[in-house]
Amino acid sequence: MSGTIPDTAAKRDRPFSRQNLGATLAGGYIPLAMATLIVFLPLLWMLLSSLKVPAEIVTTDLTLWPKDPSLQNYADAASTVPFARFFLNSVIVTVVGSAIKCILAIFTAYALVFVRFPFKRVIFLVILVALMVPPQVSVLPNYVLIAGMGGLNTYWGIILPGLGTAFGTFLLRQHFLTLPQSILESAELDGAGHWRKLWKIVVPVSVPSIATVALVTIVSEWNEYIWPLIVTDHPDMMTLPVGLTQLVNSDGGTQNWGMLMAGAVIVLLPILIIFAALQRYIVSGLTQGSVTG
Image (cartoon, rainbow, N blue to C red; front, side, top):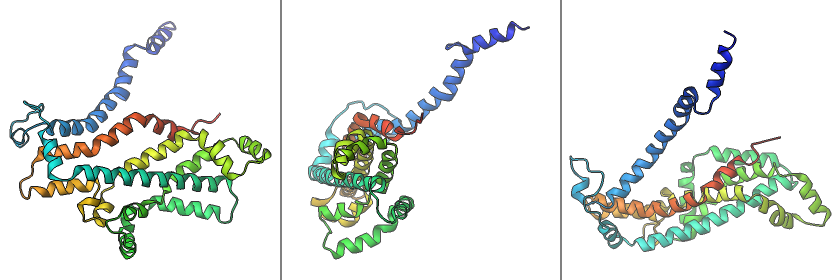
């Protein structure tokens, strides 16, 4: 009897034992596979539908793979609405807006951690409250302000209201709090001021967290739909998500679903490439400082 228990425990501790494999599959791989399919299948269906003719999409017979793949839907989408102009507008808004947001987040987080000034905790509390307020609440006041300043159908009118970076400020502040004070104290003894400490010490060691803020900001800027739709009514100033609305309305009552899927692929493909190439920064940036010794 005494030898049976150690033998059972030894079998259970083997990496490829039945118990370990069952627990790994049930608690790890199966939920991961299901979550991956839930996220990936709609994207795969969108991509395949963009290569189909309308008769293969609107049909009672489910056809997954296109019988004769064609890029005609992409050509139709590009000729129906000015996608090149939409793409340029999205690039300008995303690059300028994301750069300003990241710089503001770095400055604000540094000040909240390393600069002494009155009401610092109150200001941080206001930033936390801003994280909880849905952005839809500020749409009407922002529209009245931007319209009164003549910002309709302008780049700055699209970019300006979204420059508040509560998420970026919060994330960078929490990371800056984990930095060793001895490094900054040594820099102060060498005569370094705040500007030099920020760009020579704090920013270089905080690249993963800053990259995380940049990626999240880029994704949100690129996919922003409500605000650009409200402040732009001229095709020359519309962004890609708003351009999809023009594509939907171009055919009147009859919608070419293949062309709409092609437009959606054009919108999503650039941001998916950027996200896939740099997503490792999100994991390392969000977990920095979570392990303590």
